[in-house]
Length: 328
Image 1 (spheres, one colour):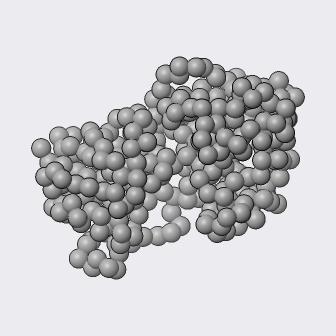
Image 2 (image 1 turned 180 degrees about the horizontal axis):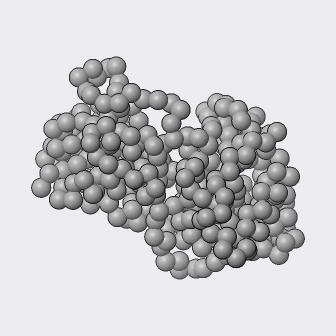
Image 3 (image 1 turned 90 degrees about the vertical axis):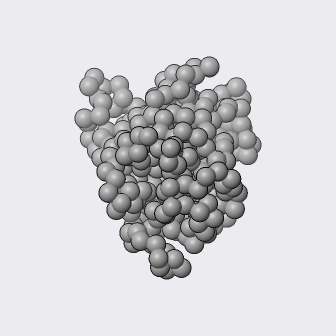
């Protein structure tokens, strides 16, 4: 049995944008063993994708260890950096499918373009090798929840980088609005974001028992997102989970454009995306100025519209397109 090694050693959101590509590989190579090199913590979501046979735990590129028979094909869904290609080269594959890098002139592949949606990027890479990919094949089957929070509003207060974190006092103002509306609200985040979530809860008058940040594993978080009436989030993996489960969202983007990592435009009627229209420094250690241009009023307005749409009869996927709304 031939082995196909796929490298995607990034976070949850990056994995979810690669779902159509992984499924395209599965369809194109039904008898091969598909091995995914990715962080082990993502395994519960990888299992939901149902296109991977096994995983090689790879939290960083330097962590990739390969002691088995060399793969017939190594697919670089990590990026176009020399480091990612070197990591795959060390597995001694029959060939490598990757975007071009000048340090490896012998490798054929398409040219990397920055202004491309991540889903499109990985599908385009496979299509350059003759593998047809369906960009719409993003959905996941919701996992079974052990504790149900059906029809709650999920407010995800954190983000993987300070530049993408909307201020806690603004999240608290949105939560207060939701409580006035009589909505059930839960705050999510990882263990490092629990203090932020507790701060938001205290400011908003939300009971501490509604703070799920740091209390859930990944599959419990996914189930909560899948059951939610609405998810309010920055540019995070949770936003991609909501897209995968068809959950309505209000998403706050900055410093990067939603054209790259937001809900794909073909998704209908589910997502309100707020963006100030300016690209900033994703590595900054303070919230992006463009993100800060998104005010509480804009978010509350979008939240009210999304909740009203959900209540309309027949307000499913045929009502309106994904809205990329510039603010400020």
